[in-house]
Every structure is written in C-alpha cells, then in structure tokens.
Length: 355
Ligand SMILES: Cc1ncc(COP(=O)(O)O)c(C=O)c1O
Image (tube, helix red, strand yellow):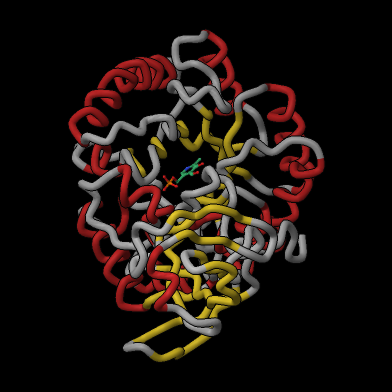
C-alpha cells in the first residue's frame, strides 16, 4: 500500500477548511492507524482524537494526543484496559462512550479505585441502530445523569454517530441530520436543566461532515475518519466532498491465462473484501475491466486491454474501502513526486500494542 503525500496533505487541509478551526475537529484514526498522521494533526493544532480500539487509543496517546475518545462502549476486560491507559498516559484525557448502566458502573468503580477520571459520552442512537440509546428513551436521560454523578467519571457530552446517512445528495444528508437534531437538543436541555453539563456533541463521520460543520453550535465536534485517505467508495457515493483518494495498492500482472484475461497479485489478503466481489478496487488505468474472480492471492480481470499487458507490469488499485485495507499492512510506503520517501508503520492495526 502506498500513500501519496501531497494528496494526504491536501485532504488534511480540506478537512481543516471545512471544519473552520482545528478545535472543531475530532478526527477518527481508524482509517489510517498511523502515528505519523497523528503528529501531522497535532502540528496543525488538532488536539482531540477519536478511536475505535484500545490499541488505537494507545497509538494516539503515544503519538502525543492529549484528548482521546474511545468511541466503542467498553465492556468486559476492556474496562480494565481503559483504566490502564489512563494510568499509563496521565497527560492524556481519555473518554469513552456508554449506552448501558451495568458496564458504566463497573467502569466508575474501576476508575475510582485507580484514582483516575474517565470522561464518558452518552452514546445516542440516531437511527443507525448499531449501538446507543434512543434520545427520546427515558433511559438516555437517566444514564447521563448517572454519568454526571458517579465518582471516577466526568460527563463529557453525547456521541452522535450517524453512519447510516448515506444519501448521495448533500442537501438530502443535511435534511436527514435536521430530522434527528431536535431530539438531541431536547435531551441536552433536559440534562442541563437537571444540573448535568453537556460540554460536547461528537457528531458524524465523513458523509455528514459538511452538515455538522455548517452548524454554529460550539459544542459540536466533527469526527470524520475515512476522508484522511479517502477511497473509491466514498468518492463515488458522495461527489460533493472535496477529498481525493490518497492511498493505493500497487499490484502486478502475474499471468495472462487467456487473450482477454489477466491475473493480478491483489488478492483478498491485499485489499479489503467487505465490498461486493467485482467492486473491491478501482483501476484508474482500466476503469472498465471486469473483476471476475477474487481469491486469497489473485484477482482475475476480463478486459480487451489484457493484450497490452505482460507479467510484471504494474497497476495502481484504489481500494473501495480503505479502512480495512490499511489494516492489512504492517507498513505503507510514502510517495512524494514519484519516489518512495518514507515508510510509516500502521501501528494500531494490531488489536493490542502493550495494554
Ligand atoms: C463511531 C464512528 N465515528 C466516526 C467514524 C468515521 O466515519 P467515516 O468513516 O465516515 O469518516 C466512524 C466510522 O466507522 C465511526 O464508527
């Protein structure tokens, strides 16, 4: 996998322009998982970061991040790992999300016992139905009030992830956000009236980034992740977004088993296989090639252009889904002006670093 440095820098700058100020961003690191990119964010004044795993949190804190949100409700042994993170990186403020009182109470007891404070955001289900509490459910209010009272915890606001909002048109995405927004505000008012603070609302991903970015609410934190590297999936689905794919997988022709066929060494161990077979990558040089087969180490293409290619020839493949693709690589090559200028480790592709 390679990253084109100029494109990466352009995406980071476009994110800052869209956000309006670095303090409004809480970018998700799950797409790239690399310390070098976190250091770029820190140089640009971004102090808040989001993660999906404990390993990502550890990578962030080790890279110098001072405000890390684990947007994955900790349960079981992960509760102890969160406490271990807070103890290992005392200069970093860690927060987590919650949607149930049982793990919340275990977290509070563990935090109080270790004399650390963990921020907690109420995970609000705004329609994705993956995690969270419905904003109108009385349990949402009760749980947040518990967060604000439990020793060892700090009420950090609401987590509002809406990965189901995938309308192609930006105005449709804005309209969809406007539908769930009043319920968030109502819940917030109710919690504040009862004495809790709701300092932040961590909102959205890449598709709804422009929707929340144009809202004036000072509590909004913008949490896109994919657009740091971007990919063919989002590029095709959301043409309004000002980002360009910054990563590619380099592949070579290994065989030409028939006149109109060529086989590449980009199997499903080299590129994310969660998109449907046939559309897991885009070949800029061969946009019409049919991706006929995809095995562990091979991808078979049908294209009349096969006649022009020979074993050993190189093609660039832009992944449809970059986040699980980067997780397949221990390190990536950084390209500047056509040359490899560095290698960056994909540190938090591992489920565990030290904690
Ligand atoms: C909780 C959460 N926040 C933010 C993001 C970033 O969204 P995107 O990948 O659209 O940038 C994701 C992506 O999966 C997510 O799960």
